Length: 395
Image (cartoon, rainbow, N blue to C red; front, top):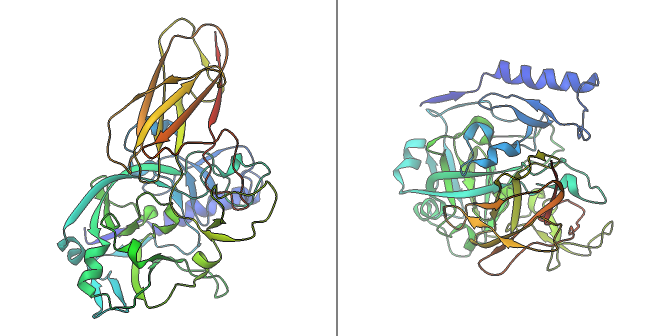
């Protein structure tokens, strides 16, 4: 494939139609209230619409019944309205430089000449679950669908940096993509990693999702993958990698995507943290996928409760399930293990009798990290991993 082009006319038509509908009252223009609306963007199936410019699209929970999330169902999160809709691989180059012995301009063929690395890893927006915060916080009001489990393939960032030759005294590595701010006053989205993190073996520049090219909305032609960390670091549509002799001071690290500097990353609800640090590793989390909240189930048959669980680079050791609101717990069966960065599916057989039930699931990872029963609050709406409650009726 020499060129990938999402029909810009169709793309802008989709976004423009949705924006117009919002302005006329058909779709709430900001956070869309409590009512969920669906939208279909290029290369995507019907996803839950949060905003159209820039696109913020959430994955319906039904797709999480699959161990691997299909490319067309992977959530979409852009910050800036000017996003790439066409990339010609004949001219695209990934520039690598800064405090290096040499500058590189890597074509896709060059990128593929490095050893290919593949693994399955959860990608999750930092604000996944933000709509559940009490008191409410500003930002995209994601439910549970700003995440996906994908098999990524690409070149080790370490190998790329080795070819460029990192000079002594280097501190950070920054990453910029093809998206750009609509106004000079808006900071470009540039992220960074400490050099020692950037040189870890599992950090890759991915050019494949599930053995196919990346969808345009998910970062074609290549994106950074930082498994175990939140997706704010997974810069899409990479265009430039820069090694820095000093700590990066860009807005999206120094001011944005920060959490309270406390062991839980939380503060008292409604309060302001005294000190913050950049968000990084994902918390341990479980999600009940089946049944959905409010579902009515037939009595006396065998019913299988199922869900997914994952952690920030540590495998899931155990998932326990309660059908009585937490009074008693039973151990779920864990599905196939796709590695420490992947989520694991879990299953809990149940023979329900008529009545109302509160279902809960709680995951624990291999180093003993688990989930709180009460929501941990911070003003940015990050790190949501409260033990979930699902109400169902058996009749």
